[in-house]
Length: 238
Ligand code: ADE
Image 1 (tube, rainbow, N blue to C red):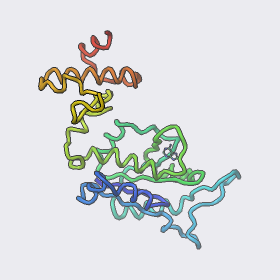
Image 2 (image 1 turned 180 degrees about the horizontal axis):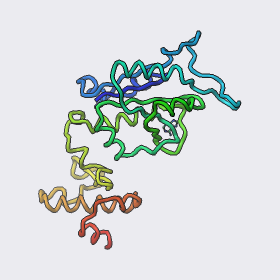
Image 3 (image 1 turned 45 degrees about the vertical axis):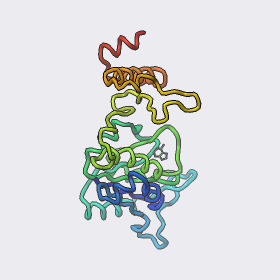
């Protein structure tokens, strides 16, 4: 899968992704990240990309020309794809959106900076406006890194054990059950007995109940979306 990023700070994106699992996936060519500085497409004398807002007001606005030309160049080289603009005004990113994005062959992201971008960019090329939460960042770069990480790990071959992305928090709108590793007792704290029993059915039941309990305690807002069986509902009533 290919991720293109139109940004004024391409290194901010590349340096953040170039580690661990995502770094390895890039090395292996399972995913490609193509970070493009749209300043290189500015047709102004000093390669400027922003100007004062019409109507006055504080801050600067990213102009349409460098972004639209950078995008046109990208389309010529790579073909069309969804163009996702990172903005606090967008739809909030979540696991369902990550899964939807992971079904695409290619995605392009546009990072804003300063006060905003010329609305004509949004009107002409942006297909999706996405936010990573109700707070304001200095730019979209960190948001893109976060989204690429969440999408890339769903691509087959990126994670060593493909089932681990299925058994985790949010897959089913339930939080993950607690995990333990050696030793059996650490500083007086022991591992729940059932996990040492070797009784797979009981372990499975215990894990399901722990997932339900955790979701009930920590994220009750998720429960209405979870696919609960009759016995899940019985358990939660207790
Ligand atoms: N740019 C600035 N703030 C943002 C946010 N919360 N999400 C996505 N992009 C942003």
